[in-house]
Amino acid sequence: MSMLKTLIAGVDEAGRGPLAGPVVAAAVILDPARPIAGLGDSKVISEKRRASLAVQIRQCAWVGVGIAEPEEIDRINILQATMTAMARAVGNLPLAPGHVLIDGNRVPEGLPCSAEAIIKGDASEAAIGAASIIAKTVRDGLMLRAALRFPGYGFEGHKGYPSAVHRNALITLGPCPIHRFSYAPVRAALEKR
Image 1 (cartoon, rainbow, N blue to C red):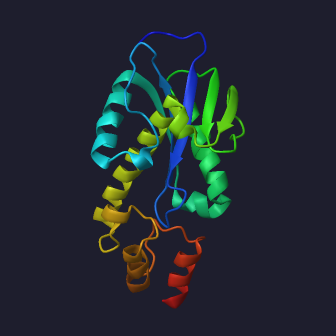
Image 2: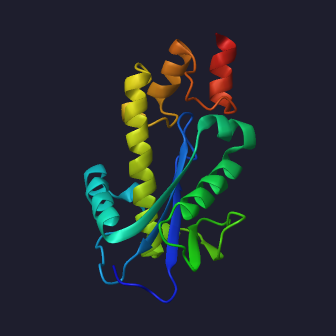
Image 3: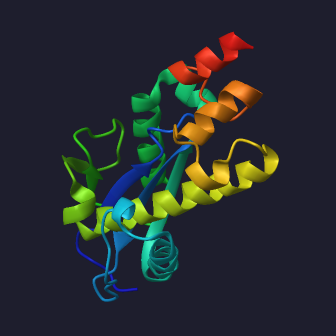
């Protein structure tokens, strides 16, 4: 891979809104000598296309992933857990970036370089779009594995988001170990049991 004078990493997360599972952040440094077409907000890219792009990103760019598990989300809150996962993702890059572009309106503390937050950056900055795709595909993979460990909740479909299927399963089965117990619908389901 070719080298840049200043390595710029894009950072994004997946999984702030779900009632279950981790929040996953990714940091990606793109190689300008190996451009990747079609990067952008993972939420508007089909699952099949996301999977294909994720493979290409891992082959052509430098990737770091950071995770905050549900217990950590419950302990420090989702915002702080997201910032922690983002900082971990930057720290897990195989190369140290000189500057970081973060999707959203906040910059995590303790980054090793300068950083700026860009609202809707996953749609405007290719590196953030790449990070969005990696974070989403990693988190989706974790939730597919969770569906095997905790059958009946439908994690393979809704990935932990508060769909009607998930809310009904919560009431019927009660929370499982990967639920976020600080979230109101999970607390309510626990109190009903």
